[in-house]
Image 1: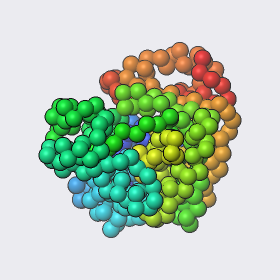
Image 2 (image 1 turned 45 degrees about the horizontal axis):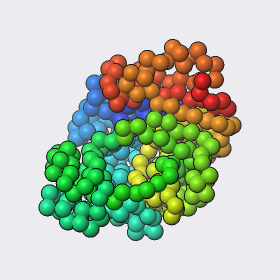
Image 3 (image 1 turned 135 degrees about the vertical axis):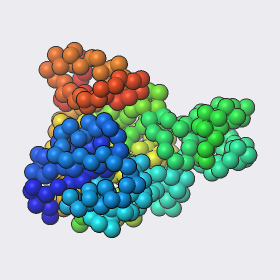
Image 4 (image 1 turned 90 degrees about the vertical axis):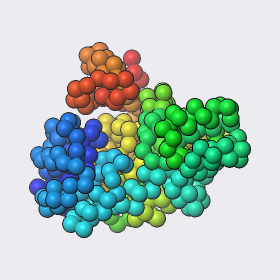
Amino acid sequence: MLAPGSTIGILGGGQLGRMLGLAAAQLGYKVHIYAPDAESVAAEVTAHHSQAAWDDEPRLAAFAAACDVVTYEFENVPVDTVRFLSGHVTVRPGMAGLKIAQDRLEEKTFVAGLGGRPAPFAAVPDRAALDAALAELGAPAILKTVRMGYDGKGQARIVAPADADAAWEAIGRHAAVLEGFVTFAHEFSVILVRGIDGEVRFWDSPVNVHEDGILATSSLPPPQIILDQQDEARALMAKIAAELDYVGVLTGEFFATEDGPVFNEMAPRVHNSGHWTIEGAVASQFANHIRAVAGLPLGSTETATLPVTMHNLIGGGIETVPALLADENCHVHHYSKTAVREGRKLGHATWVGASPA
């Protein structure tokens, strides 16, 4: 159990690190951010900040020496960085989940091997393989790069085989996975926290609505079809967490279909669709991630009251903050990012026990 006053290192300096840092401070911990970016909204609210490259081993060693435990806030931290740090300090969660989540092909194969049901998929290492995959799965389909890509990036929709050339160019001609199109009623997420002792707790699953590939809203209560499929999806995520010996918050995204939940992807970290838990649950995903990596007892994941709506403030949407602050039922989170760009997450707003005005 990590004593108050200890230092928790966080790899990555974005808004998830910012919210983790605030949760750690509430529990009496100092936080040290490590990220290569000049701008770090996480570092603004934490005690220490190291700006250095992911492969700068002397700086990584110094960072490890300054921390009592290390975690990460996004899934694209290089596995080699975590491997190096693990030789100097405890890293929770470790490399296993990170490695799998960074490779869509490996992720789908792994989940299928545990009895999960991903969308039909085929490996597309090159342009010729795309034609073969389309012949196998048919169209419409989604072409996704094997590595990197989030919030709709690194993806291209193929409506008919004639779209193959354009789709291949759109993803930069990188190794990819072709996913068969899934007919679904709703999208939802399963967010769990797993402690050092293997205890697992789940938050209620919100219904998620995406716009242009980016999460727009997460809300509770979800439609009945999600409630009916929540237990099956939870069982799969618990199995994944146990297989990885995972410690911390782990998220799985699912499609609710007529045939049951279809696994989309996982994120080995706190997740955008769980931001509602800050005000909407007894213990938030951020507080429980810190509790888990610090070896503390987990907090209750019960929903405080219904309904709950979390709305992302994306791009110019951040300009609505003054109006949102005038709504007495609205909790506003501004991430303090300076550049306003289309598609960039700049904040979020949450309503608990009331609907958005």
